[in-house]
Amino acid sequence: MPFDGIRNYELRLQRLFAGAVADLAVDPTRVGPVSLRLVLPAWLVPHKLSGLLRDWIRETYSSLFQDIEFLADGDTVALYEVAKAWKQIESGDAQSFVVGALDSHMDAELLDVLTMSGRLYHRANPHGLIPGEAAVLFLVGRTGSHNIGSALGTIKAAFTGYEKESLSSPKGIIGRGMAKPLRRAFETYVPDRFLADLNGERWRSEDNGFALSGARVSDALLADFETPIGQTGDCGAANSLITAAIALAPAFEEELPGDAADTTIRTVSIVSTALWQGPRLVAVLESFNRQGEAV
Image 1 (cartoon, one colour):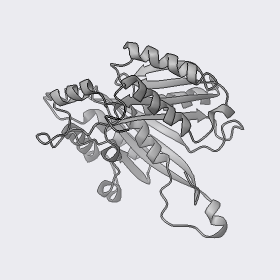
Image 2 (spheres, one colour):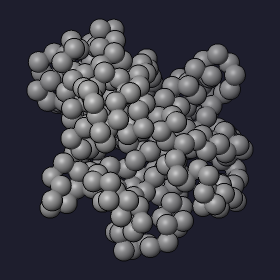
Image 3 (cartoon, rainbow, N blue to C red):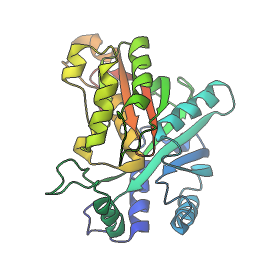
């Protein structure tokens, strides 16, 4: 949304969330009321606005969500919460979850904070982030279940790490926290795609570069890995789910003739996420794409 289109921050969050609900690939009403886990920026969780947001979701989507839990970005990674939800479903603790993230930098005070901390891209700072906003929701359930429908993909593995260096005043090399999970992911899987959440900040490039130097990554992927946040803008808490959603979308090389057009093509992607607060996550996603289908 244009920055000056909606100045009411509460309304911006509502409009973003409503758009994500409308865009769910599977109609959640077929599943019945499910638990919602929503990752928000850390400052918003204890703020009074989160209470207003929770009340609005309950009133607006009472038929979709029976329990609403807000989690703080930085304490967790949204994509890691998707992996945790799937583990709970796999163990039989639940039938389905909706896991998502919601964040917006489109507020004057938030933009001022980014500017004063030297993180915003502008004429005098070529290594800053471009602010964005997004809401992303994943419906997580068992593949093949009659009430879930066709799955977009699954999480095959999730490797975690933590960066101990202060990013504002590092005393050593940035990237040790990402190095181990990234190395383990590439040692265990041979991916078709590699997506990193580089956002234009220098520390993010240093972090990724050091981690990649110790991982067994093919020359083809190193030469052309994907950086979707550079196109969408930095969307804070939603970054990892934006990257995951793009990893689950089909990437068609060519149209297949005849019956081959209905063939399911499985694509393995490695997705890396780095948070300013320290958490690191490298997830392995497998997308289930039918050749020729629209997304």
